[in-house]
Structures are given as C-alpha cells and as structure tokens.
Amino acid sequence: MKNLLWIMLVTFLMGCTLAPQKLKVMPQLSFESLQGVRVPIELVIEDNRTEDSILGYRNAKKEGAISFDGSLVSALGESIQEALLKQGIKMHKGPEPMVRLSIEVEKLNYSTPDKNWVSHIVMQGEILLTVSRADASFKKRFSGNKSQDVATAPSVEFNENYMNALLSELVNKAMNDREVINFLK
Image 1 (cartoon, rainbow, N blue to C red):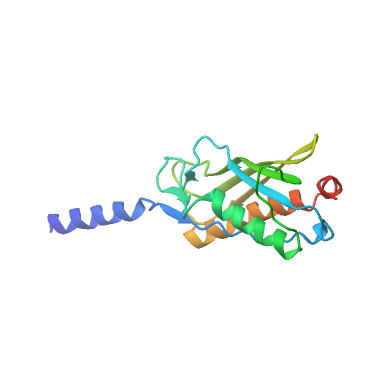
Image 2: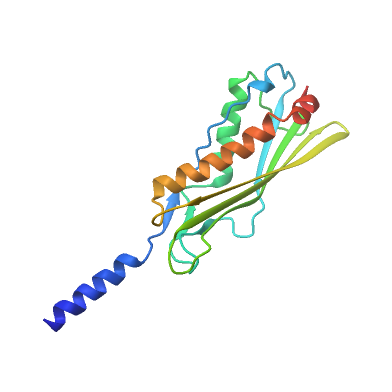
C-alpha cells in the first residue's frame, strides 16, 4: 500500500512538470501596399536576441523551454520573401543591390509572471527595419505585446498560433507602413 502511494505521488508530481515545446515559425504575411515597387530587393534577416535559440519558458521557474522548430531567421526570411514575390517584387542578392531591406529581430520573448501557477502569459516582440538605397537609408522600429489569461499552461498549438500572430502583426505593420512604402517607391 505504501509503495502504491509513493508511485501515485511520483506520477502526480511528474505530471506537474512542463515539457519543452518546439514552435514552427509560420507568420501570415500580406504586403498588398507594396504593389508597384519595381526595384529589386535584397532581403536580410538577423536575430539580435541574446538567447537566440529560446523563445522563453512555460513557467516562471524556467521549466519547459520553448524553442523554435528550425531557424527563426530562415523561416521568417522565407515567409517574407514569399509575400514579396506575391506582389511581383524581384529579389536580388549580390554586391550591388538596388535596395537592401534588413529586418533585425531585437526582441521576441515569452514569459509567465507567476511561479506557482501558469494563469497569464505575455509575449513581446520588436523588430528594426532598415531600408538602404544608394547613399540613403531609412530605419524604423516596430514593437508589439500580447498578453492573455489562461486556465492552464498553453499547448504547443496555442503557443505556436500566439507567437505567429505576434510575428505576423509586427512584420505586416512594418512592411505596410506608409513611410517604408514611400522610401521603397
């Protein structure tokens, strides 16, 4: 009987730990405002976060690391390039690009404030967009925050959708910004 209680206690405690998660980066991007841009663009994506392999942890005790399934830079770059190509924008890579579009991920993190119970999640993101052409350049910072009350620690599907919604919001806001569009045209 004692052994059965110990086994039940250990099983219960194991169920309380949070498993790591790997999230796929798949933002939904749409750059209709860029129709009519005729200059070839070289796209550069950089991840300037200090901990570039981890998005955050599933609780404040730093249990259950949340990381990316693959490279954040590659997945984000592929999504942005696909959205640019849909608008008829030519992509160019080489020593003399007509326009260089650089997106630097300055902040992208996931956190939960309470150490004892996951009841609230917060995600923050910030990107720096730089457009360079000949001797001129333009820089603009875009940031966003999302927070939500939750009943339990979110599943991988929930966190994936949540992260991709924030990335979609940031990149769409940046690429459809009137100042950015005017500089590109």
